[in-house]
Amino acid sequence: MLPVSTAPRTVTVRMRTLLITALVLAGAGLVWFALTWATGMQPLLAGSGGTKPGGLAVVAKTPSVLGGTTLYRWRPGGRYVVTYAFHNGASVPVTITGVDHTFRAWVGAISGPALQNATPNFELLAGPFHPVRVPADGFREVAMVFHANPKGECGTVYSVDAVTLHFTTLGIFHNTQQIPLGTDAFYLTRRC
Image 1 (cartoon, rainbow, N blue to C red):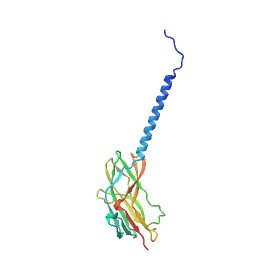
Image 2 (cartoon, helix red, strand yellow):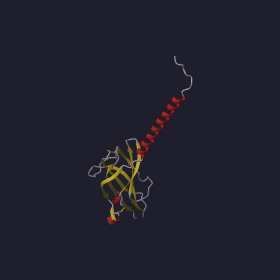
Image 3 (cartoon, helix red, strand yellow):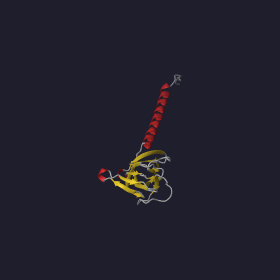
Image 4 (cartoon, rainbow, N blue to C red):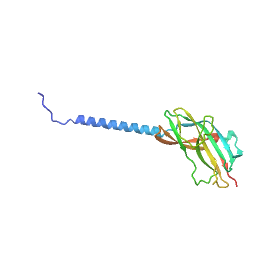
């Protein structure tokens, strides 16, 4: 019969502890990588689109070689609509949920934007905005509606050259992305 050893088996205990620690660190690293990837996405690209100034008179048009920015004159009820087919360049779906807009006490010439659902031919859909799910490598149309601000102070000029969209990735991770308007940028002035 073999003698029974009473010496502690520290090698096995240490190896088990090291293995568990390595697995926990690897899991934490994967979670950190996934969260960084999901919250750092900038997947939305403005594709084809169009603009519709409604009730706003053109004061001056900058030549397109200089950027094409147009100056409009404020009128009550006037609005400027920019509609884009947004492309999702990510490998997972994203949902457009909102946009940064001016606050209630804003006194600039124009307020907004507000998001509005649109059709593939860039017509606005009636009703309130509903979040838009853009599939991976897919396109969906969304309109951004700017309104002539009735609280706008006389003599103000307000320029709009970008908007900040809110979206979620996989329906969980919330993020924002600034979308430049490029040649659809505009100025609005209120003269009294």
